[in-house]
Length: 151
Length: 151
DNA sequence: CTAACCAGTGAGAACTTATGCATTCTTTGA
DNA sequence: TCAAAGAATGCATAAGTTCTCACTGGTTAG
Image (cartoon, rainbow over the protein chains, first blue to last red):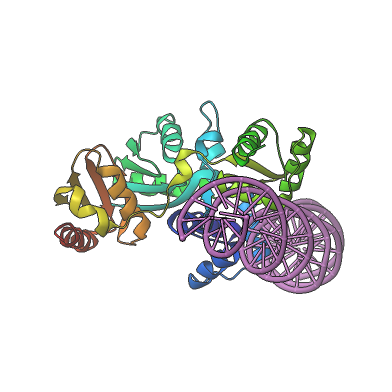
């Protein structure tokens, strides 16, 4: 379990659960087999710029919007490590999950590479569908994306 | 000086300064002739939903914008029956047609389930593409969606 | 007029988050 | 393979935030 993996899981958990404290997050991660201290979570949440919003019913965490991060058309290597969440494949398709608002910029960066293995991309809010020319093209592309994302 | 006036000034100060703590905010308000305790500021900031964002150089406060307002997301069961129109499948894909503007909320609800059968979803205006891990995963998922939609 | 209520507040206790330091794990270069 | 440097982490605790309680001033019902 690397730091990056952990931070991605944290983003996912934050996005799908109403977490009220770092200690609570620690327990949720524990249920997933991830055992870390609150100190580490504090540092992770700083790295990930996870915002803490007070509400009448308690606090809540949320991923700081990705759109406020970048400008221009950055390269894949520049943004993928920050915005990437996870990746799955099936048939000639690759499904990339990203942090909120991360899908559009990544898809644009992929498109602008002009890679012939990639027929096209469709980006939603936090999901990109990449349609590849063949299953082997899909393998090559997925492998490449993963290696970039892990930087 | 009413509570409302004070809160309005707090918003202004937050918007125009990099405030690093409630104590610091207290001093900034002091310079403006506003004398309150940090306790009160804590309550004001809860009322105003002012988010606290950790950064490498310290924390920073910001008015929570509409995008991060999403309170408890509705469950699939709560919205699918109202918004669902029909459903078709092909290969590992499910195509769900919804009433106009129904696609986005349903896709979010599906995503937030964290179902491993579902690699991801992409939502348009009234169509959702669901990419599943396999054809059998697609069968399971389609069946489940149908049964929820018919409630 | 008086009692009951209520929003707003300060003081400090309770809780949550951040940090300094020591230790362990990883990577790099000889 | 080994030593040195750097990254990552836990522990203890400091720093920061929220909550509880008590009190005040203002408003309302009798």
